[in-house]
Length: 176
Picture (cartoon, one colour):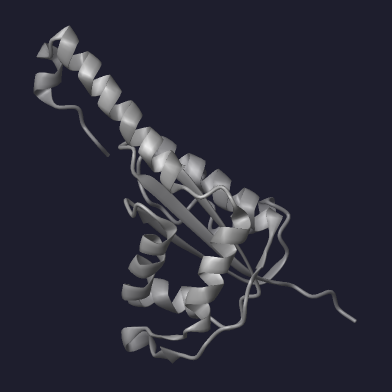
């Protein structure tokens, strides 16, 4: 959690005005870095997955199939991003300690498999995708072949930097 500086109580009104302007600019910058076009986000994600990857000790992953956007995953990812911004932390649990599986179920997403990657501070989706590729666990989630659906949410965090939530899923097929 972030703590305010002990000297902040003694800042002049002019300095506070500059700080407010700087915070507004940082937030606007993060908002500008968060793509609004889901097709663009999905295309970038699929381009990365199409290349395959070596995920350290997690192994080598061949090119993975293209993913489809899923609105239920998008709602879940956005809700998680909102909550993470409010608590100013990166956590893979929801507000009441829910796992990703529980959050997916609450969002109405019936899954056989579900995964999530989080990142904060990367100025663009391309940078977030690169960060996930260099982390063995995140890389393995990103390239896992069984996933067929995805969504990405991005919001400005309290410090103005983008916070990214990517949800991946394989829907449960109805029994024949």
